Length: 394
Image (cartoon, rainbow, N blue to C red):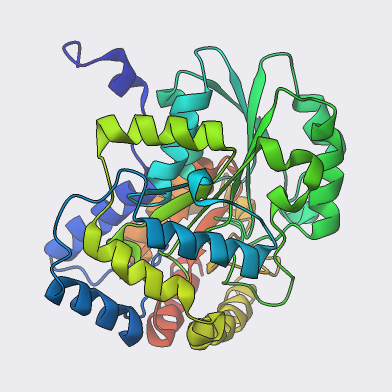
């Protein structure tokens, strides 16, 4: 370890990927593990998107792509922002990356200096704090609980701001809680940020289409904050394209230019075939993927009913994404099958080892009372997994 850089030694391992690796290890030993830890739709990529990729191969799209993405893909992204979000971006404000994770990393690397503070309303996606650490900034956690539907208040936001605050990261629909901030709630938070002209906003909207009724609102639609907001999106979740690795930003032009420069020295342009397929995905009406959202809605209803029957599980009703984030603090301090449960990490490990169900500890998301359970899995697997969880806790 002492030969490695301080940078990598400071960096935590992704908890979701670590849990998936542990589950794989048990599977390799012949254990029948049900994985509810990864945020990955269990649908195939829609045929019309695959057709566009096949055509791109046949049309010999095989050269290096421009660092910030093909011009016609950037046009398609601008059109998508206008159609779905009411946002006006020019192609010069768009940067296409190898997944939304790279988009977020680019933004942090070009904006943050050592000692800057990043505000993370919790629960937050695991990689936000790790990427901030990589940029040598400090993460400041703003807590919430299931009692507040995992939402922070404008007062909490204001109380967390210091002269060192440089960036705040919002994520709605939220991973891990499925919570959606309404337009009124975002505008109220925006009113606080209007007073601090040196703070930037990263709005991660990757789950926008996986939404069960609360209208999606983009932070950049607040005119006073448009010039300080970076909108992050991608095709992984809504289009079942996780492995295609395409994310993108809409940002002030000077930030987009800086991200282009950063990416030019790290990965250069994203995969050429995946970019061509993404044009087809974004140009299509959103109704083309409604069947997946309808199916997730059914599973959400089912998993909430099943988990609610287990003593000690406190649940809210998530408005979007495909996760439930139950509070399981009832079990802290209890001994189950000879194992004492002190925290959410112990609980998630217990479920893996005893129930053979992979979930993720809420500690990784900034909330140590909860675990994240993904229902991006088949109905049969969800039913069997919850049955096993119930039996292991009986």
